[in-house]
Length: 387
Image (cartoon, rainbow, N blue to C red; front, side, top):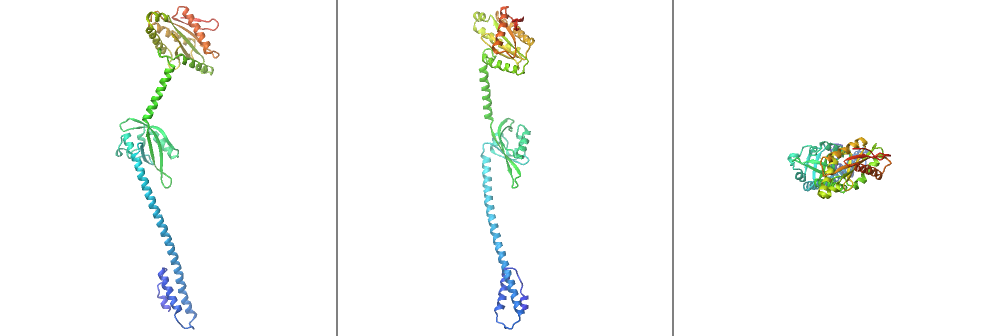
């Protein structure tokens, strides 16, 4: 019997355990002498216990195997679903990329172009073969701007509707509104970018036209159409602004010239209104070339009257401007016409009314003295100096 058990090859599989169990049970239940030794009973009990233990282990391992099998099967099914979903999303993205009218680029993490859509081909004129693999920054008018945009994306700063300019294949410039989305891997690291650019060239052109038209309307609203100088309404606004700057200390002083055309009515009566209009037009040209372009301002104050504001001007510089205007006008010999100019310096306590009144007073003093001259108003004496 001992040799029999020794000859059995023990196995920790379910089949080996079953063989041991059957052999042991056969020995136990086979008739034998009741006087058999205890040693024989022990020998019989050991394989039974081993068989039972082996069977339990085998059943446990089989249960774990089934669990792992079903778990792996579930994972494979989920992976199939995810794969199909990714394929559908990829196909959808490809269709969107292909059919979108906007310019769409996909870039790698270094900013090189991986792919772009038909909209980009149509608007920019590049082919896939000609542009894939090149740096995206070469598409922008300002190459450095691309690096700035990439830096913002890397810092998780949202880039949306950023207006910039691109250069097409033929060299012409395109205004675009750019938005950037990053692509990330499973570790949430940036692996690329999707750049969408909406062509806003036409919108920008219309905006520019609107700005220009509004500027023109504003200019017409404040400009005298005959002389080309500012009108009297704008004079009221500008003189108040000039006083404000004077009182704030932005100017040390400023002067006002009031100019009147001598014998203008006589010219109109003898040569007609067209001749008078020609004189007004020429007067506007003369004043514009005699004043500082970016600082002084000139206005048609009335029919044949004009005013000039000279910011930060003293008496000497005011006289130079007045003398220049008188001399240039005289050179054209419009009948018997000439100019009378009244000059006054402003102080912080002045108002528009008092300043114009003093200039007007000085101008009439010049006119009473025969015209073709200037007079300077001086507090106390009323007038000082004349040409």
